[in-house]
Image (tube, rainbow, N blue to C red):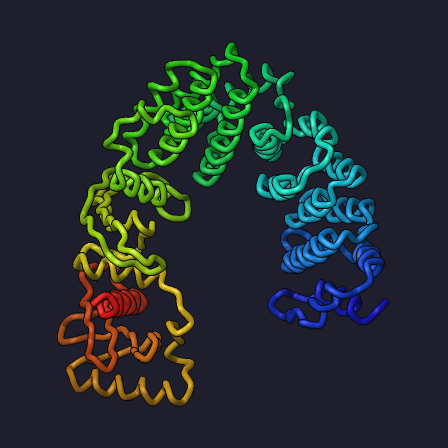
Length: 518
């Protein structure tokens, strides 16, 4: 066994925190003989497979991704045969076991090869022992979005995996995509349309029981996380099913779509309505037009209306730039990692044309104030819907309009000469400058100064810090031109020193725009 393979095996057995992935190993993957990759696979099969609870499993995942990168290079240069062999990749997949959270990358390698043997092995594993998560199943099938193969190797065999909860949406999404792109003359699930309709009814009933709370009567141990997971999986599957039924084109199979339109969830209503429009059912047009009023679903509704040539069914007030920006922000806020649901209310705070980073010409800019009234004191904040879509966990309601735009511009501006360093890790030159800034702050009456970051904006240098002035606590940024002080106005979500620095960057950016424009 060569030293590079020995080093890889040693790395896999080390805790990730203690690992350093040598450049030499990355280089070896690019230049080694293809047969050496099979030797590596053989060695992997002799190791103890990592458990999902083991930190080392992430290192196996990184290794498989590196092998995938090498395979992409080999396929691009028509290297044949590919190594490790398809059988060896399938063996590794089984070796890692059904609980593995990284083995789906091996199936992606098989799919990427697109030859008959690789596809047959991949399909067999997806049916018999699918990845543990929905995302893993989708990743395994993702190469087919770019690479063609003999689609008869996939369908209808792959529909046998529909019985696995993690498989259904990914399999249907792929079959829908191939049909829409014209790679398949007829939707491969056409013979299964009755089964798909029943499956959609089941998903709709499940989501309805969550909406009305009746699910808690039969599953009292469900946690909020369990319910959220069921909702997300249900939305993905319902979307794929609505699309599949529409693409199959059987206008007699609409009862489940009407049931889906009765759900409170606006996304599923839109998917069902769009499917009915494709099946020439008038009720779909009416519902889709009505849904444009809902900001969080507006962009999807407009996209479907444009695709289906029924924009004339949508009230023009919901097609304006302001309405689209409002919809973009509401959709952003609905994302699980932001707020998780649409705001109770959202209204325009400011509309103006401004020069904006990344654009040569002035852009239409829209600020909105949004509110969540879910019991107790309402949650209010401000976001931008165009030309960027951004919000913040910090309470921005005390900022001026100009500083709001500066804050959001400062968040996204990117340039090699605009950067910052932690204030506790400065080089000697920056340390001297930071000390002078702190002396100046003390001379101007600021106390308890706690530096956070030292920033560079082209030729300008600045220090951002937490501080106190008199009885007021707050944050500030200081440069050679002076101090920008932001006393805390919110106890729960006050501005941070990083927020102050974003405002500083945005102000500098807009000032430079004006200077060049003048």
